[in-house]
Length: 114
Length: 112
Image 1 (tube, rainbow over the protein chains, first blue to last red):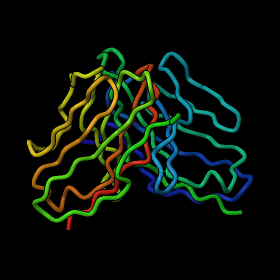
Image 2 (cartoon, rainbow over the protein chains, first blue to last red; image 1 turned 45 degrees about the horizontal axis):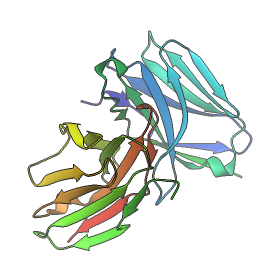
Image 3 (tube, rainbow over the protein chains, first blue to last red; image 1 turned 135 degrees about the horizontal axis):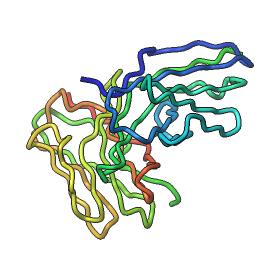
Image 4 (cartoon, rainbow over the protein chains, first blue to last red; image 1 turned 180 degrees about the horizontal axis):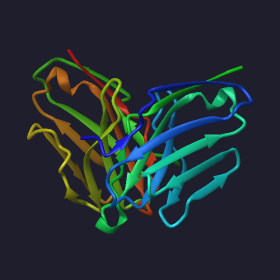
C-alpha cells in the first residue's frame, strides 16, 4: 500500500518549457514534504521542501505547490534545462511522530530535451 | 569529507555469503538512515539511528539484516546469507535537523 504515489514514471519536456511533476499521498498525518533529485550512480540530493502550513514554496526555478485537501503536491521547474534531467522523488514526513522517517514515492524520470 | 560517504561503491557476492556495508555520515549529524532501492522501485526504509541507538528497525526485511552505529558516527549494515533478492542499491543518509537528509552515493550490491 503506497502512501506516497508518483503516478508518472517518466516525463519528457522541451528545454525552456515548464516541467510539472506530481505526487499524491494518502496519510493525513504527513505534514512536511520534500523533493529530491537523483542522477545515475549518485545518491538523491535535497531540492526543495514545504510544510503543511504553506501552500507554496519557491526557490529559483523550482516551486512546490501543496493542496492539502486533495493530498496532492507538485513540483514546477521553469524554465527546464537539460541539466534538470534526473529522477525526482517526492517524500513525505509525519513530524508529530518524532522520528522524521520520510516515505518516498517511486520517482519520476524527467528528460529535458535540448 | 564534506558529504556522506559509503563503501564499497560496488559489491558482487555469491548467494549465501555475508556482506558488510559501511556509511560515514556528515560529522555532527545525529540521525542516520539506511534505505534500499531495488531496480525500478522507490527508496525503501530499512533502519534509523538517533545517536547510537536504533529506535526504528521496522524496515529491516528479515533477521538476516542487522545494523549498528558506533561513536555517533560510522554505521555498518550487515546482510547475512545473502539471497538474490537482496540485490539493490543500499543508500545511507544523515541528518542534523531531522527533516532534510543528505544521502551518500550508495553501495550497489549484486548477489549472484
